Amino acid sequence: MIEYIIRRIIQIVPTLFGISFISFSLLMLFPGDPAEIIITTSSGYEPAKEIIEEYRREIGLDEPFIVQYINWLKKIISGDFGVSWTTGEPVLDMIAERFPASLQLFFATFLISAVFSLILGIISALYKDRALDSIIRIFSLLGISIPSFWLGLILIWIFSVKLRILPAFGYGNIEHIILPVLTWSFSFMAIKTRFVRASLLKELSEEYIITARAKGLPEKVVIIRHALRNALIPIITYFSLSMGHLIVGSIMVESVFSWPGLGSLLVESTIKRDFPVVQALILFVGVLFVITNLLIDILYAIIDPRIRYGGKNV
Amino acid sequence: MSLKKEILSIEDLRVVFKNPFKNVAAVKDVDLKIYEGEKLALIGESGSGKSILALSVLRLLPKNAESSGKIIFKGKNLLELNESEMREIRGKQIALIPQNQASLNPVLTVGFQASEPIFHHFKVNKKVAFDKILKLFKFFKIPENRAKEYPHQFSGGMRQRVLVSMGLSTNPDLILADEPTKGLDFTKKNKIIEIFNKINKTSLIITHDLHFAQKISDRIAVMYRGEIVEISSSKDFFCSPLHPYSRGLLNSLPSRGLKPIKEGRRKYIKGCIFRDRCDFSYKRCRIKPPLLNVNSSFVRCWLYD
Image 1 (tube, each protein chain N blue to C red):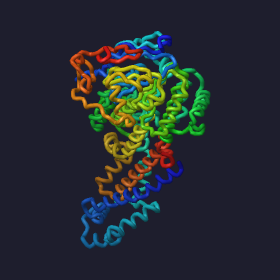
Image 2 (image 1 turned 180 degrees about the vertical axis):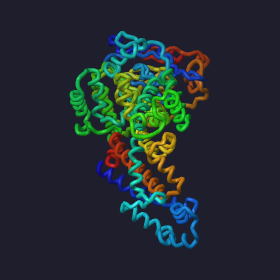
Image 3 (image 1 turned 45 degrees about the horizontal axis):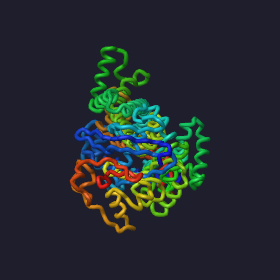
Image 4 (image 1 turned 60 degrees about the horizontal axis):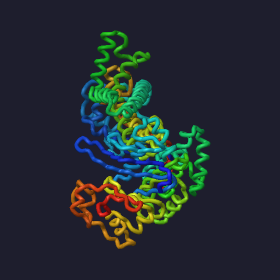
């Protein structure tokens, strides 16, 4: 088990290098000259060519790409993510300031959508092709097809404009989080519900299910003890991979509800061409993704004995 | 034979799979009795409906399968029982020993799975049931310390022994074993033969392995395209098989000349189902023969009328 975890951690290292390389390359891929952008945004007027040239030498932008990357990587490893080109604030502080808001929103959404999609998916599989199943399937189809920014606006219109019971935007109190979570959960759990249903139905068609039924076990036990345990393996993968949507999904929801999280920070800094912030955010998401993947793999080994004992026996 | 008590009596059983475009009858007009203490081997090629027959006894077929006729077990027609009455019979009175390939749950320990029928039916706690299964494991030479391992860590032969222990754990009145030697090599097969000879239980053993059937069974029933074409005592069957299909099967054995049965042509045939492949077919075979009684054997062939 320990050996397995260590092996997985070693495998992560090249992935991390890849992520850092890509997030650094973005600086080069963006249109526009970084040195020019910095001087323009900080001074407010168009600088002369000589000034740009000198500044470029000053911050090392005249060096070859690889050298720049290595210098940048050295700084990152020592914890220096640079300062924002627009505000002059350290990037790390900016992310740290916005992170809790995103985390709150994400975990509330993740928890609610995971619990509900599991329950609805199991019910759907149990009542396959009957009325209850159809209702749940229609419901998840709606969740998949309704864009979340539109749903968010509709919810704001109903609950904030018409009923006046919930705030349309803002951050801090519990009532602020209700609408964003509701919006995000709806689309988040729709696909998951379908996934749970499909995985469970697949397991129920396996041969060991006949064995379990032949023992005289009630259907409830067959599903929970036998089918669900196996279905959980793909379900957990899928659920955990969706954690990577922490920033991607939050961009939409955070913009609609003016939620001060990483998603809206990413939008703001991209518009302002604030590269150190964008780079750091992308690196951050990537690392988060890799870490959740590692945790999934460890979780796998706990649920699936075939992985836990892999390599030792046939 | 007539003095013996019937444990299971299948009468006029027909299993039809309902599909949107075409209904398929997998089992047709099957009459079969299993007597107390005997081992009946049901032989036939793949797709002949052997496993379907076993699963229909336990009423474990998919929802689109419809069974008609009677399956009388201890005076009750199993086809008329409700789900909860059936659950009392499954695993407790009639046990299934499934095929060994994917019949064990990959994420549960073999010991737990094998002891499940005990603690479920006898309402004892899991520890007691586990200890009980360890004794059975010991009897079948599965090391005690491996009971907490998972199916993928077991070889095919060991998995089969786990399934046998599981089936026997509740001391059922009848055992249905589905292809117990499938996928096993010669030495492992011999171990399974040894085990089945040790078991003193009324059993219906489904197999396409003639050698295995000969070694373990008292009587043989031959199934072909969903119908039973011959029921004979094991001894008679291997000395003088009656039905042309049975003769063909035996002649196709390597030890008896490896002579294949003639290819068939038509998919669906009226009358005798074997007539397109039969060397002896004549005009009368266009009418379906009944199961005829010939010196205490039964055969579905006009040659014996």
